[in-house]
Length: 177
Image (cartoon, rainbow, N blue to C red):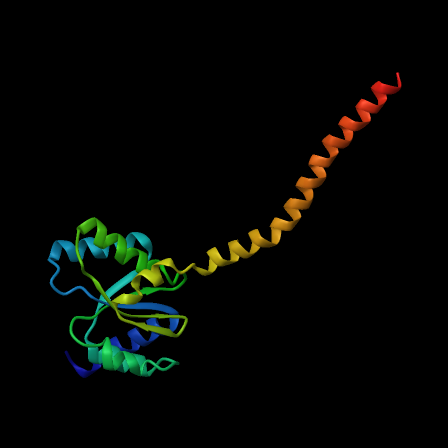
């Protein structure tokens, strides 16, 4: 690979890191070609971009990105490195990894690290927690539901009171006759 090709890859990776506020670094070494193709297909279906890169190129690309990613160089960027990019939903790659493992009855790909909104999580032990994280749209929906809840309770109480009031008025009107 020439210097120019490496520079092009570094520039493209830097742009991906800047455009996608969520990325996961995984290790899928030991998977067969068919298994890797199944992983890529699942990523494509879910809108997650997956690529395999050289660690030195990833390190240089991360140097061009705002934020402190030096901890990744020391821990996650060793050995086989596959990166999953997702622009919107931070928990999607974690859910995808768990789903793939279940379907394929595999322990790979292994989560080496994840960056969600510039917060870095290192190690496989964070996978379950990351999969349970709610996405931004889910959190907004929860807040809206909570805000609507008191209004729904008031409307419900008024509606139930209306039928009671109508029943009382009817009973009183029948009594006076």
